[in-house]
Amino acid sequence: MANNGGFPSWDSTHQSMMRAGHVDRERTVDLLKAAFTEGRLGQDEYEQRVAAAYRAQTYGELGALVADVPQGPVPMQPPMAPPYPVAPMPATFLPVPRRPTNGLAVASLLCGLGGLFLVVPTVPAIVLGHVARGQVHQRKEAGEGMATTGLVLGWLGAVFWTLVIIVSVAGG
Image (cartoon, rainbow, N blue to C red):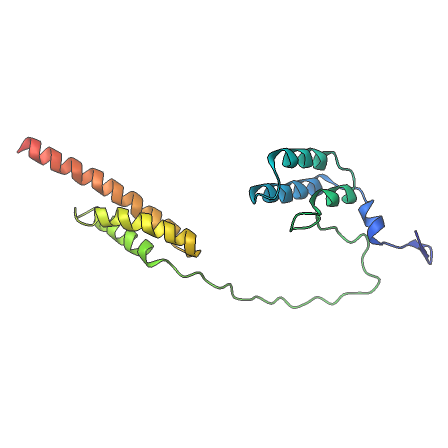
């Protein structure tokens, strides 16, 4: 460890020897879960690394467990404040690009709502809901909730109108 005016230097080797806390271990386990979910780790390797993360005592031990996954090692807090004052940066907010809404999802929702009052829209609500959900996932579009709601309303309308027809035929 180099000596700079009586103060130790804080190089990456020294940081890797710093003691890790519960939050650091949980952050590492979250990275391992993501790597396992993405298929980067097998079940056995995932379980071994998670157990090792909970036993880890230092940042270096935690960093070694996630060094080969794309997220990299857990972020480490700087051990000391910088020797000079840092001017705050003005907050800049970039607009988040909106995903386009799937048109079939909107159509499914509208047909599902119409199916509560008329027989005809129930089948299109079901068909459009299934097709829209597939397109939403494939194209990364917005509208999954609308497609699912249209699908559910379509099925509820189909059951309702089927019962109405059965009751009217049996009672007539």
